[in-house]
Length: 317
Image (cartoon, rainbow, N blue to C red):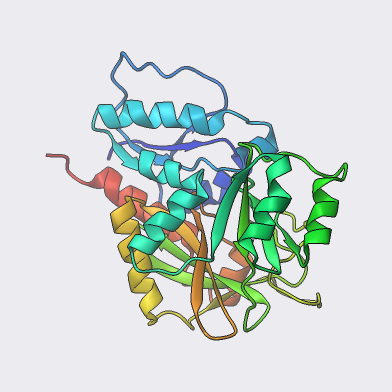
């Protein structure tokens, strides 16, 4: 079996994956990508390389990790190495409009959205957009950080002119039409090897930081999918509601067309019953508590470990 190399910038997120490998008698290597060298003029080791780079890396002090990872993936692909979530996946991870274009090409619906660069452009752009309430979010935020709902021009203007205003990492803001939901939650569909694993319902009543990893803290008070917060015992709950729904087939088609191997894709059901897809996470995490409450038979890390082991064990012709 060839080696398995996990490309990442967050030690905490790979702990449960290592545990899944250990249960299967396999040990994976790590390639920590924060700073470093990509030896483009040499030949990389023959291995299975799994890219877990996140658009939120800057929130952990790893500002240029995605850029370094893009160079590394380019090198690996040049040499025909087995790469899971290669350069096409990384490109989608860091550009929401690219996600929406690919989702729409696969027959999926996305919220009305406009991209804005420039603090002085935001209010006028929102007035021209004319969707109220609206959601303002950074193109590269990660985990739902920085997502806020504004009900009026005055409220948005107050934020833009306040000391709390900070430019997004890449300078790009997204104005997005608020989708009034049937219930205060979003749904995240998990795929490994472009195959459906399960959907998890994420309660948004207490905030909109949606990272499902056990190590993530829920700290953002802004929530664009609820009117009034309420207590919730479990933020993440596995659900079978969409297992036979047409959206799963369309999401699998999207993954095939977009060349994404592993992803958690988030969508919301509007009051009228329309499903709107608004985020693709190619660096996906799983909530073990939700998996255990569902019986523990379906685990994201287990499915991921099995998939990578199968790739590493496959005969290369």
